[in-house]
Amino acid sequence: MKKAARKTKAKKTRITLPGSKNISEQIAQMIRVDHAGEFGAQRIYEGQLAVLGKKTSSMTTQIKHMASQEEEHLAAFEKLIVERQVRPTALYPLWHVAGFALGVATAMLGEKAAMACTVAVEEVIDEHYQQQLDALDEEEPQLRKMITKFRHEEIEHKNIGLDHGAEDVVYFPLLRAAIRAGSKAAIWLAKRV
Ligand SMILES: [Fe+2]
Ligand SMILES: [Fe+2]
Image (cartoon, rainbow, N blue to C red; front, side):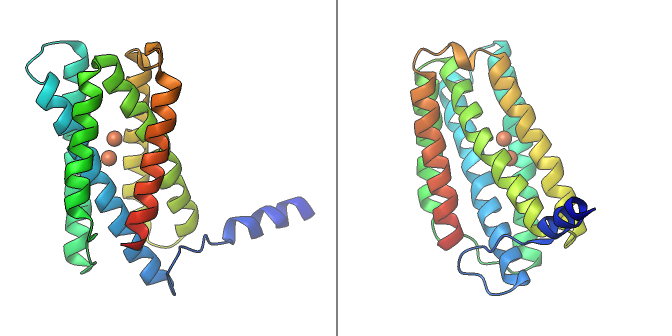
């Protein structure tokens, strides 16, 4: 009984987002971060397809599939940015360049390295979206529904990467650690700028 009560209490605890004063500011910050993240994701795949796009393989087919889902994610957050008059990230030019560069660099290392990039990024995004869902609790059912759907698609992307040899890349642990750190830094920055 006591355990159940503790569980309920824990569920109600909100994650306090940095620099936010109230729930509507927290939600605006979430939309800004997610919009920036989905933009970055789209740019990663654009970079990968700039290198690998002319090849016909099951990997490029999968990259195109993931890229089209990222476009949908980005469009949904773009719509929210406009509807709710949320200030977009001021670091748009950085994500434009950094996302594309990461996509090009990993694709140049090979298709499996491109997949390893997806695995590393999506691991972070999966955790990030789950934290947002926990923080939203029962607020914003529509936004929750959207984030839940996108999170499942990001997990699908991660599994596509794993199924396509991401872990076969010799330096996978190193690449994964570097990209994870970069993605976490990007989220940290997008929350603030
Ligand atoms: Fe996405
Ligand atoms: Fe994704």
